[in-house]
Length: 419
Image (cartoon, rainbow, N blue to C red):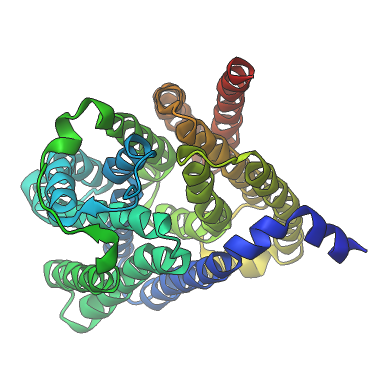
């Protein structure tokens, strides 16, 4: 009976998303396993500060990959009435993504610099951050192109495979190559660049043959919406990363590294909005009726989120000592449960944000994430100062509830206006 109900209610999701969901699940599990194995492999072989240096690179790599350049999304919206809307000039995309990456790199380098307590100069961080952000930006925009072409499985492995390979190569080269962080980072970046080239070759038919209007997406009035997408992702990345930035900075190295691993493992639930979000955006942006798919996405996230929180609660309650020994000093039973609830709330918020962007209301999303980013800095700072690691979990649930409320209010006004 239940199976029949699901088939009746969710046929569109099953027909369109099952391949992407399975690939996303496998790729997320691979990424999580790579990080966890690296953590367990190195935590007892190198110093806590050295491990934090490696994990901080993982953190910055993920941060750079999560920032949305917005070039391709703006192109899809502005060309929604054209037959070739899924095509974009390859040279145009590469030039614009690189230009944006060069502008953003100093700010990402500053974030990396602030997370580290070592003695390296800011120029060292900037030198490695620049190619890292360029690779991340091009990968993110290429993923949007692949998604628009309906190759959802390729889009998933494009990004997650790049991050997993980078983690694996960095850890292996660092441990076996004489503990040289420079050689390890260089090897990781080379591997990610090679992975990107492979996907360009696989997806070459998605690009237009012409190479004119190289700077068009930067100056064209219709395409300036990329600023809204870029600002939204930057603010979302910052507000979602302030916990680890301040944890790396103010918590003991072993506690900060432990929290980073816990965060990376538990937030793999975000594969659901990772799968559904781009499709929700594409349906609204291309003029298709996205209301049914959006409701179905929320249903799946809430239903599976309830099961997820229940499993996490039972697991940490039954095996607290074992999990403490496994993941380290940041483990806290009540904190983990609160954190899991916050992760589910964020998942629903990401669908709200995708719908707003697809409806052409990306500016409202920018406002929400600007407010949340400004709020997050003092919230996490004071919670860490007064309550240490427990404060991080409390700050997370507070931030996510406020974010979800604001997005719901904006979306409600847009729906009311459209009706």
